[in-house]
Image (cartoon, rainbow, N blue to C red; front, side, top):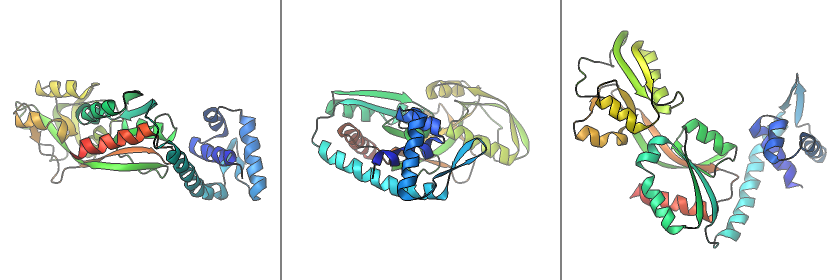
Length: 292
């Protein structure tokens, strides 16, 4: 059994094509094709069939995936056992959702840097969907984000359910988002189009047939909050990002739903990823800081 062939099959199924798999594996497409043919000969099955211009995986190929994942986890467990006493070093690539990075992660970073001063930390703020895709593509080591769907290839650890809240300036009056079939003359202030809580709020508006004046896109959560405090619109955010402002009377909560919608914060890594000492130490720092 050549594990490289199984890894090639796994990569094709994850990437969606032979060409993309070749690019990820840093080899030629002919090498990928050759390894698949060898695998087919070894097991006596057809793994792909040509439909139009595309090579489509057969049931045999898809049925092999769970067993390949189990093998990769076992192999990575061996590697982890060898590395568990190693001094954390090298690069650690992490992507974090904007609100979690701003309000939950700074203490984690402080703890981690004290414990692992020799680790080069690469930290990015990304959209939750982008983080998930980056994990699946092995472009990052760890992702800390709000759960968006379920991926069998990711191992996740939950860090709480976070309720969402619709907020506005205390100056805003006579606005009712619980009543449907109306136009509300306000702006919705939020960040980019694939922001998970933006999508959730816009879904509520569509369901209730509510229209608003406009949507204002800003990059940072703090700039969004400052504009809402200035009575230029409303926003929909995890409650922990506005809790202090609500208590201070700088913002007011607007009724939206009897039971608040929530988001699950998770830390995830690819199931086939080796848990390096640096990754393990960061996860430990995350547990200690967020559970405190």
